[in-house]
Image (cartoon, rainbow over all chains, first blue to last red; front, side, top):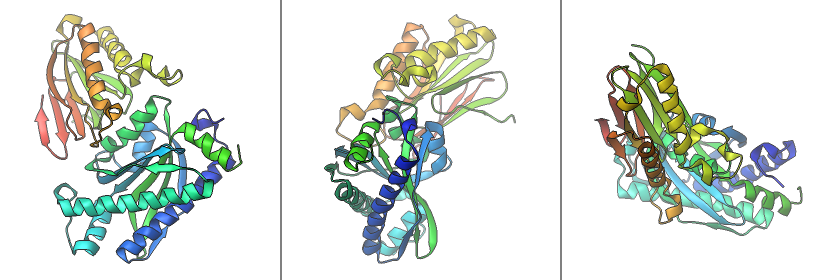
Length: 205
Length: 161
């Protein structure tokens, strides 16, 4: 049994990296076909982080992020967070609506629904890859969206996990569009209990 | 100007006189400023959960994480520095509900604010200013020379408590 994130060994972390790779590969293909651009993903990072480090990993706490949060229900619980920087939002909204000089604080309803839908499609394809691979039933809730300081946004997973421990497990990846690296984070944050289910299903516990 | 003391998540710090204590980007967490104007002793606590007694054992080891333990601990530290209990006042900020969701369990911001108010009531510390709830993040600067609290948000701008 995995009781806390510190119990994970090298093999577990390798498996999670591969899962992140498959999931985010699928998510990036979905994004690529939506926006018609070539998308490269880097090998995901799997990190067990203290809460403060989890925030700092994503950037300076006051930086703005447009964020799509998707809660996971069923045999894998936790959440997916897609934290979109101004740069990525501008790239996407330029493709969709030919917008330039996008200000995250002045997004209109069309912008928000476009970004939410991107999060939704990326999140769902990420999860369906993992569900197929590990034969898990994973439910995906409707995405919720906000724009705020990334520290305030990260307080949401941090608080939920704070009730059971002092660490977060993040499977994180950054993406490149048309060869340009765009800093944004797509994170899968699973609960500890879900990991045991996942590893059992994959036959490595 | 002296570099402000930085308080992370589940952390508190105290200061006396000149300078400031800052905590960045509170979401559903709550920042609690305690201040004794005469001695110019202040403390800023950044709690993330309401109650140390309601969580899994093992999670409750960091007393700075919870409203019910962090606030009395920080108060004791301030009293040791020379602050006088009867003069101490509080100003609080944070406790937002970051994402619209119908699930009440996730509205931890409200629960944090309620727990902070309860902890302050037990200690008979009056709350003289607050900027709480709603759906946006806040950065808190607490100036211990005069007790002024500056609350900054990307959406609503700056507010003084």
